[in-house]
Length: 210
Image (cartoon, rainbow, N blue to C red):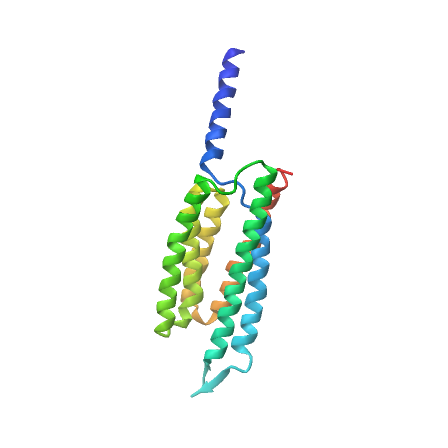
């Protein structure tokens, strides 16, 4: 009987150590909503990019992007990111509050730093690439660097974050080969995959804690 108590104590200690080293307040619902935002953004981007915007030169279909259209696309992409971030923070705060946990502690700080390093690096690299005219690689690279950021931060949170990161990298690499379909892959990666993994996390973690 005493041996069972010791085993239970060890199990409780391991559980406490696991919780203290990982940020578990990520909301699956925020992933679902982020995916929906991405799909809406992809649709709007498609309307802007391809609406009367393709001309034929020597039998080849060529995409012409004006500065005004690029600004519109940037505004849409920026809006999607901001809405996803706000939604994530609000829902994570709500989840942490229900669990009587702190949203901003040493673990969440480490998660944010490890997430930001690849993401900021990728963002700066993409901006430089755009300055050089490499627009075709923007969609694949956003997915690849985002996937790297997720993997780098996954050791401080739920395991499904790592799986999503690996998925995003694979989709990004495939998209690099099929450059003409970047927006389609982008919608699938940031939209469908976010909804898929967000749904799994929601039903496995969010609903259990209600």
